[in-house]
Image (cartoon, helix red, strand yellow):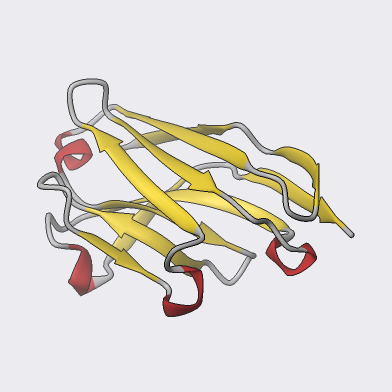
Length: 118
């Protein structure tokens, strides 16, 4: 079992920045692919494996940056140039696979709300 705890959401004006963090604990799955998703539909924002290999949603490349600290079992999401359409609940997810391309995410945090006003 994996526990994931997100933090860092909030409200910001368009053009601003926010940084989200997620701490993973509880299982060997912490060594697997971790990532950020948004909306209740869990649309992929960005994922990252233990070696730092990343996969981004094409529309967010260059705007968002995912990072990982294996020693602290944390991932971060730096969000820049935020737009109102980036408003969403953002979720941290953990895969049961070490590789992100399998997209096999079984564990989720509670989510953190990001609201971008125009």
